[in-house]
Image (cartoon, rainbow, N blue to C red; front, side):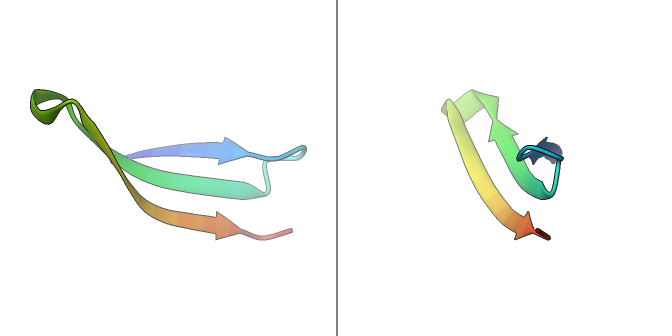
Length: 34
């Protein structure tokens, strides 16, 4: 699993899983604290 911060001040966080053998990305969680 990987995380990616987003937003002007990094107040959002995406958690996602990359399945390379299936050429697929699954979004597991979106967290917004702002």
